[in-house]
Length: 273
Image 1 (cartoon, rainbow, N blue to C red):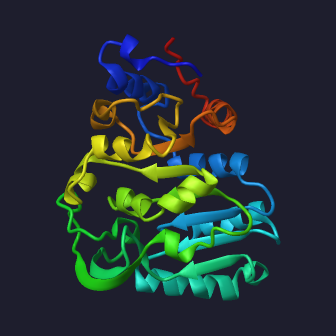
Image 2: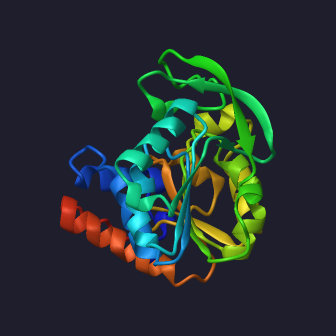
């Protein structure tokens, strides 16, 4: 898909609203789209990072993609969720015992301890910051933080895919993964929203300034390149894909996503040329 959202009056906001209108006014489940990405990218023998593994939905679904020779490294800061992942692995997924590794810590740009705000009943909203856009009760505790570069061996099979969903801390986790991003150039799916980023004292410009020198370009799930910080600020979605520049995976992944949205939801994503 070759798209120039600036050709639309209203830019990316208008483009996303056009897609939303075609979807009937309700966004489809973006977690399904994440699965489509790693099903296209990951091959047997690869290694995968699931950063912010939560309940393990992606951890255990990507494991068959890497196969018996591959590895899935699940990183989860919340102690109760990390313990749940271990129970699931032992009880429901014993065949993955040699594939899945669970790290009970948060991913950051340095190894330390930090405050952690858990949201009872809404584990997907747990964060290292007390964000103003989360209106539920929070319980403050302390967690260990690690650098991904310190827990992932650079020797061995490639890391082909990274998923980051850590409620605002994504840029810090990336900064702690410079060596592995440079060595393996994995496809990275991550979340970004303006309010959560602001709680961590960074913005979309900082995100792009980190990724571009690393050789990455960022796209939304509809194939629009997020070339400027203003695009993130006006975006109506929160999931993005960072592809290494020149990677043949970009076209394959975006084509697969477009086909999936058409076949599953009947939504033909408009193309702005």
